[in-house]
Image (cartoon, rainbow, N blue to C red):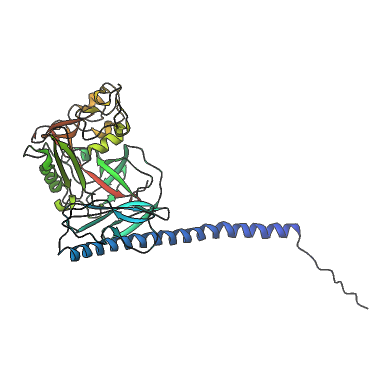
Length: 402
């Protein structure tokens, strides 16, 4: 009689180990793919929300005009966004009917921070670092884009970029001739400044002036804003790419001799692809904006005195120049007259520095500029013998391989 063996044979240890290894390999391949799919979905949702907010801002302009007989403020309206929504910051005068016009209504996830700016009589709508679902988002040229937080770049980090085609280029494509005064195209050297972890863009300042010397405003009155400088900036950058992110409007407000003054630079009205650096940004780069001195709150437009970008001393305004040594801020005044004795790499004759967008609030005839000896200085706004124009551009971080 035949004997039947009912014992079942199990897996050997080697077979079990083989199965575990196979499952581990599958997990290593599949899990990142699944995470990428989820991440792309989150990113797409953030971009959809950004587009929805922009659409809401467009509807806001229409509603405002319908409610106010076609009128709309000439200045910039700013909406501050939080988890409670996007709220209008400005208080308009009683000539406007503001019923139901103090917030933006939109569907989707509310940003944790960021701003929406409506300018040029409602024609231009710009976003500033909308933070949605741990993405930082912006809207430019009819399209929203979001990126995850990236490592903060140090002030003065070099970037090679061609503003005419809007593309990053390599160091090999750059030549020293591209850093001469008046050069406005080709692969040029730029510097990143004031980068923020929650920002979707890089601010880049060129390493040379794109014009010879020019007056800030020939009228001699700084409350009229940098008219001649802005016109020169527009004329020299007209061929630059439309892919550059539109500059955010800049407003200076102050009181002089008991009278309130202000001006707003809405770069869109000039058709500018680039902007001017702000004196406040220079102060932030050097740490002056955070310095507490004699009970003050650091440097502001109300300060009367210039300051050296780096040096020593208790009072910020009286710091001495870092002569005979390499200044860590030399990248801000490179390619200017005799700047090498103050730490820059290359000097060029004819330009002692460049204008900022900012007025000296303590005097009606002065504006701030970056000087070749490594300082934030001031000069007569109608003076046209010393300072030129050095552009700043804004570039989407996702477009630079950094």
